[in-house]
Structures are given as C-alpha cells and as structure tokens.
Image (cartoon, rainbow, N blue to C red; front, side, top):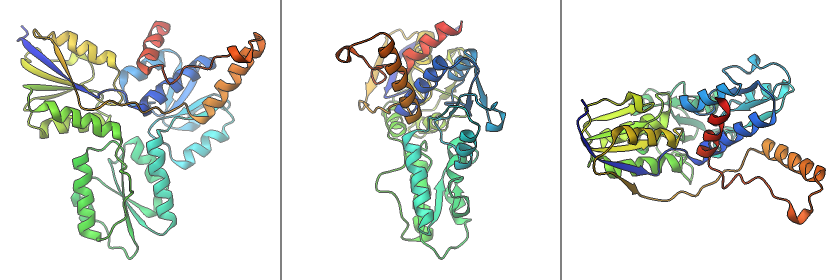
Length: 349
C-alpha cells in the first residue's frame, strides 16, 4: 500500500534543452519528408521513449554508418559525430542532416583550434559517451580523456601548452574538481572564455539543488545512459537528499515514497514522463513548481534541413499560386518538441 506523498516540488527548468528540441524536431521533419526507413547514427537523444517512438515510425538507429544503405536519408545525432563519420555519411550518397548541438560544435572547434596551435588538450568527459567519443576523434593525437582528478595525475608530462575542455553535460562540481587538478598539475592552462558546460545542464542542476535539501526523496527522470541525467542524481545526493531515485518512467516508482518529493527530468526526457510521475505520486497537497530562471534559447533546424524545408515551401507556394505577401513559413521556433512527440505518438499507433 502506498504511503502518502504530501507534496511534490517540481524543479524548473527541467526536461528538454534547446539542443534536444532541435534534434527531435529535425528528425520528425525527416520522417515526414521521406518514406521509411530513415536512418539515424546513434540514438538521436538518450531517452528510450523518444527512441521507441521514432522506431515505430520507421527510423532505424545504427552504430555504424556502413549499415545505412546507399542513398537512404541519414541523421547524425545531437551528441556530435567524429569527423570521419560525417565524411563517410556524406559519401554514401543519401540526404544527410547533422543534428549536432551547437554547444558541442563549439567544443569540437576549440579542440581543433587548440590542437592546431600545438596545445595538449585535456578533455574532461565520460569514456564511451557518444559526445566524448565524437570530440576525442577531432584531434586524437593531441587529446587526453580524464574523468576525475586522479586521471590528471596519471597523465604524462608535456613540454607544450595545455588546454582544458569539457563534455557539455558534466556537473559543475565534476568539471571544477578536474579543472583545478589540471591547474595544479600543469600551471597556466588555457580554458575558453565561455564555459563548455551546457547552460541548460547547469540550470537544471541549480534548480534541483534549490529544492533537494527540502525533500524526503528526489525523483530524477531520464535514462541511465544520459550523462546529464546521472549528473542530476549526483547533484541531488550532494545537496543533502537521502533518497534519490533515477527512473525511466512512472512505472518504476516504488510504493513507499512519503512526505515531500522533488521531481526533475534530464535534458532528454519529455514532459509527458514528468506528468505521468506526478500523477502516480498523487500528492495530497498538490505540486509546487520552483523556478530559478526562464530559458528562451532556440536553436534553428540544421542547415541541410533548412535548405530542404525552404525548397518544399517554395514548391508548395508555387503550386498553389500563393501570393508572396500571403506566404507563411514553418513555425519551428514556436513549436515545442513535446507537442511534436505527441503528434508522432498518434501517427505511430
């Protein structure tokens, strides 16, 4: 029998970041523009519900672009791909859309520039994560992956300048501890003027830290292979909450939660999962949303997709003889990815 949950404290911001919004909407455009199958290199984002929904619409997720039949449309995931993967994808002759998050692109550029100037790049990230794999491949001979301060101590001495860069989804604490270790080890290291850490990831961590100490339990919604989701769980524990649960969906909630429960979602988790969790918790005294900042960041569709959509709009307007003054462009900025996912669900079943 469920013990009563009194109140839910709902962290804001939570859920989809601008990069995930862009990637999900881009893949939805691709699905609607081409007959199945449409291919995607790696999971478009690290969330099972999102991946399953696209799979039901004929999207095939692959871990090697060689698995994509020549000529078929292909999307590269939001986490960023190695340069050789992008090159191989374009050589297959199909329509290719690179949905890499612009913030990851920034880090790739920093790695390329620093390596070109003779720096040794110390990259703080998680081994095996799609973003880290893609970033390391930008300059493999000039970069070292570290995850914790002890990894910095184990690096070889170098006689060239050192740059310290980061996976965008790290927690601020994880990043700062390793960055400080690099400064202690190498002295005057180069770091970008603007942090590599994703603003959305930082905002979600700050919002959760605001409520965690007031909660008897915290529920973090998101997948285990989502770096920013796991960082949220760590933040909740470090903020003083004794019971922290990472769940994929409401069905994984235990029946013994009580008192005040905090709820947040990783940057790849759709709002419908949050709504389902709150419904199952059924707090007697309702839900209070605690907002630390408002986000209005918008990333437009990838360039390749903008070109396709522009051509499609021009063809439709020409076919229907729409006067120039009456022509309307696709409302991508004002369309939420959560609404797109809901529409896809209706199509998929």
